[in-house]
Length: 326
Image 1 (cartoon, rainbow, N blue to C red):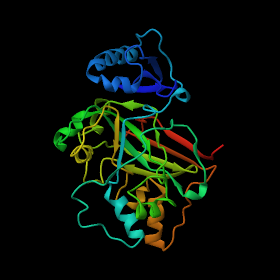
Image 2 (cartoon, rainbow, N blue to C red):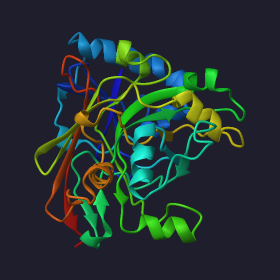
Image 3 (cartoon, one colour):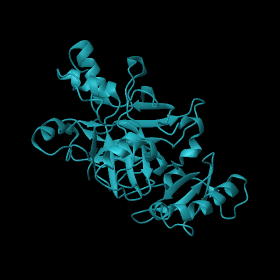
Image 4 (tube, helix red, strand yellow):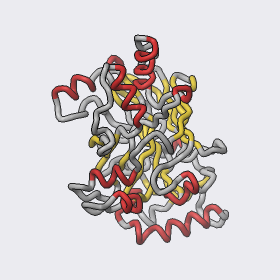
């Protein structure tokens, strides 16, 4: 099943989207918003799936051609946002660029932080920030959206609580992060609001791309109109979504509408490119002695599209331009 949120108020209005993403139908009479659907998932899912099947068969009155420009982030705000750094080559390269090696306990548990859970931008919203010298960067990721997750859930059971997947651009401010990590409790001002792809999909919709642990496929990235990376999202991390959920759930439950991701997609093969500029700059420091690729400036663009192996977009694209506030 594919769902989206039409721009309406703070939380959007729930839409059911056809498999080919060409048409949609209002579903707010079943659940007013995506969050409302997640809150009562077991009750509303059969009704949403029945509507989805009828839409795909062309048997729904009131369906309309989908205009992606009308779509908000699937969850404009959520109850909890958790993001990781689980792809090992991403961690290794960034640490090597500053002269550090991987810590001995890197495989003991996933690295995860808690970020801003509100203000998610739509797929085409401009990234508006006060200063281009803050070191603006994108990070290409796939995020899971969970239902209720009990405290102490084991990793072997944790992914059964995933209700949806979305594309994520976890925006980072590279000039602010180093000093912040040295003197604070972790990421804060260095991690502004992120953006989500327009379409949320249920795990079954992914077919063979979802193995109950990771989402496979090609994470394609463009920076300033040039191809920047074409990465395999289903490899390169020793930790899966179940591991990440279980790690956080050691001491807390999850509310429905929790967003959790594994971090920037990264592969050991350098020829595949990178899922963020920071990692590319780290590679340039390692291989050439200094960074060559500029971080994002006002007027620059970034595009992210996760595709299956036939080139079909799974979540719709994130296509944003960086602009100054005002």
